[in-house]
Image (cartoon, rainbow, N blue to C red; front, side, top):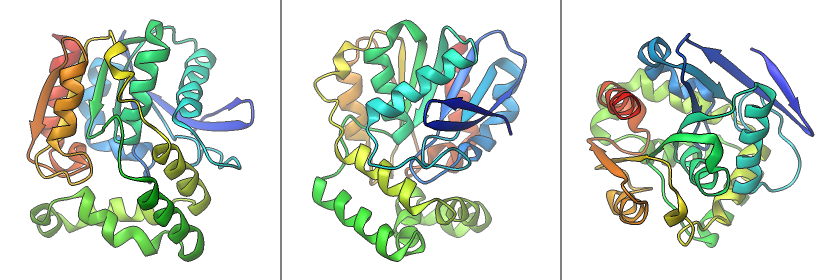
Length: 258
């Protein structure tokens, strides 16, 4: 996989497809850009797809200190600059969606269409995030993996598709505890509820009916505040792009090509 040096950060990325329009895919907390594998066959036919490992994840650098959503957003802008991509579609899930919101507000000239998936303008409490940070720092990633799988996938999907769940769990357990904790801090300190109304890019919000992390009420909050935003609700938990891969991909393609 290619890497690009962005200051203190070495970012691992992949570009696939020969479409004229560029589409950036941004991963969730505790995954790598491989989380988007279910979408690639179709998306790469229609777009020039850029996937990357967020700072602290996968093969990208685990830089020291706690991160911020602004920092992660600026990482994306620097990556676009390095690859000479002036303007892109952007699709992010969970933490990736939080980065997308920041870009929509602070770098609107770089964003064509915006897809915000299983995400929210604010998630959880400082206490809950601090507890998770403490757990992974002292006990490692396996200590939180079971609970995360219960949030990522519905009971029905966990029973019917154990191999897909096992693959997602492996991604999580292979994550750097330091990188994971640093990104937890970014989510802990994020509150974009007062800013999201400034997003002007055409926006699609995707949510999961059974998502306990970012339930449909959080999607409605975004749709109510982003002018002209559309919504799609899928029968899934938090990783809707895995649990409802075909419907998710169809929704994204339909929105970006209509």
